[in-house]
Length: 196
Image (cartoon, rainbow, N blue to C red; front, side, top):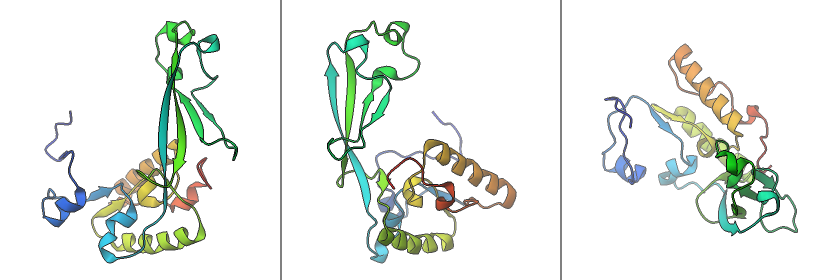
């Protein structure tokens, strides 16, 4: 649990409702990691497109060699396969020795299916969305006291290493200039491994 008088944690509440009702705690800087288009929804601008995921889990009773697949994540980038990847949780690090050696019977896998409905995970990169995002980014650049950070706020697929580098560079910038803002544009991080 975080015990710092400068940090307030609120769960199960709607940020926008709290903001509208004036219930946000006093702050000098707000770090916003949600969808950038949701932040500006009151302006009536069009929404950006996002891709979501649907997960189907299956317990495999007795996979050969103790594991269903050779790695934790195996991608299936084929138009003939309805799912995008399979995750086998048994490969997660720090498992007991018996699990690592394949001696534990059965394995839980999850197939990930791409979906246009549901919680946003990934931006949908196309020229129309890029143009619309640039309009949102111009608004965000003028927003005082708010730093837009992360995949949804930047409308950019970041690999984990890119996301961490982005956060570290923003912190370095805060120390150097007093402003929590990116040192470079999201597109300067390269394409990442996500949808192109």
